[in-house]
Length: 95
Image (cartoon, rainbow, N blue to C red; front, side, top):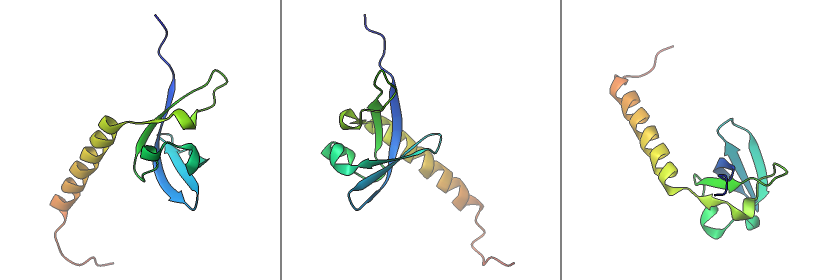
């Protein structure tokens, strides 16, 4: 049996011109040519799992979109937004 392959999980923060800005959970940013990513991995907000080479470098061209994690994160964000809405008095903010 082969050992599990290491991956780096990132989110596509934005596509700026032809550059994809990817951010990991430690808030480190990676600037990658968008052309390297698979077509389905170029959407802003997409969660990607990129395999790591033996030398520790992500193989961006082999990254796969993680739909389950993307849905989980979206659901968590919606839940947090609902909590914030529930505490909003609806009035104007006074300083």
